[in-house]
Length: 575
Image (tube, rainbow, N blue to C red; front, top):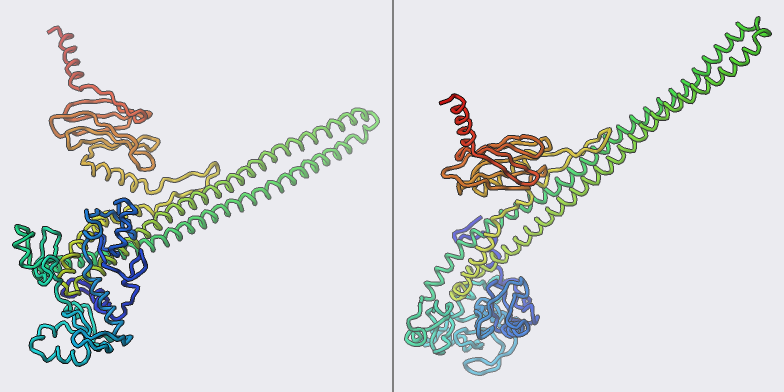
């Protein structure tokens, strides 16, 4: 929900409630780990003590980088003194000091009567603690009427009684550095929004670009509200992108697991089938040997019955036949063993091939799974980092808007807007690295070898064609070779014809510009043989052959061929 300031209600509530839970750590410098002393703000909106920054400048020999975000900083000639003061943090630090004095009931010297008493109120106009009597005097004396808006009492410091708006209203504008008795009501834009008084416009700031502090702060707040509204909307968008990427990551894992399960299921069925075939072959081998043996025994018995009457006369012949019969039986058995051993070897080889394909397929899918998970992890990390940077800008900008201190808005609004604009330009690229994260190479089992299927060839080629169009090249012809190589021809915005070759993985491997024409070129192509494509251009009537292997092109002018043919016919006619 966006309110009339252009900020979400959650962000506004956080800024208003800031003073309730604020503690000393909020005002602690991350370099010296102490409360900020004369805090200065870098262009990246991180703040540090002035002395700490001077030490960093000396340590880095002037090549200063923000210790937190490593953004490079242009160091002014006068060092940290030339960096902008953090008016907002100075307000918070002053408030914490006063709050601590009230809560601990510390004794202070009254700024009016000099009595040592427990602090009950503080006058920001006088920059002094007051006792009860002097506080009452401030509230009733007409001459101190201008001090009343700048009085802070103990009850105001209690939880939920003091907000950023009220704290800002208690603070008066900073005093002029040059004329220290005058309040700075003007801003010198030429000197990087330096607070000045009216007298300064006749002195060192004469002819400079001068703005009224209140008017300038109003403009800066308006610009900041608009920028924070855009930034808040972009933050919601990037959160949705991260959410989608997390879901995409889960889909990648689930898809990989499903692919492996399907592959294991197919391999299991194939292995079961091979096992059954092995059992059948083994049984057939055993049965065939028995049948041969039984058949031989039967023949022998028949011969024995036939030759019983002739046993005496034919005994020698019978013995010879018996020996031959035994030899034939052994030969047949050996041949049958050799035949079935070959079948068994083929089936075992097939079994080994299937198991090998299973392992290669699982390895391929697992590798693709790791690659895609790496992409999603990188995208998620970038998205989270971007969200943190956005939230830092939104929180800083919200605090500036809620604070009624004009100088806080003047000094910091432009920086927040600039940092926000830079961050939004970074987001224009989106999450293009995840466009093909769900595409997997499919692996199927074959009786010979594992064959990688080309998945989403159309989508991959579309990506390559889209890259060609982004280079302001249009397309007239597309042709494909038997090996999957694709040639794309057309013209360019510089009146040249072009040839682009796309590999099986969908990426452009070679490109060639054919030549220039006087008009818009039209270039067409067709597969010829091997790696060669026939090319024809419309404007200059050229025909030729392009070799996709060595990226060479040989052409001739079709009009010369036609004219030559006409001259031959003319000569033969005897004219």
